Length: 184
Image (cartoon, rainbow, N blue to C red; front, side, top):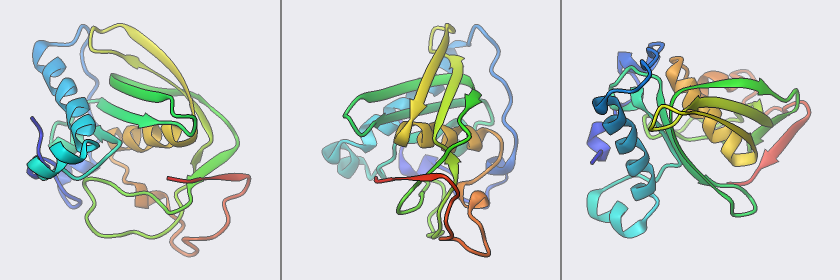
């Protein structure tokens, strides 16, 4: 089981690397890593388990955050209607996106970033993501709202990008053109 001390922090070189593709079909080792990413996110949202193991709550985790520079992410989040998006993916890619933007009203956070970085993070309002599930089968997911933001945040990790890289440094709370504010 992944615990907080397994998650590397901002400043670690792995967080700034472009992660490598995972060979398909996935190895047993890669499947184990991917499964552990999803388990962490699910467990971190359970108050009792999170407290017992000292887990910081999260809605997503990428392999580079545990110092594994491979293209793997896990997301476990509900949309505004309560629909659960629980995915563990190898080699996820955004294959299409809206022109329209969205952002989290209170800004984003990250399990690898301890210090606050206030500001709005512009994201695409809608994305279509393709990747491979635990069995190596291709999956295509259409997302909007919070799930879309979570997937974009995690895919950024695979490209060595941290959320605060996207904040306008000159005007961190400046308006995001055509942006939809998302509550979280």
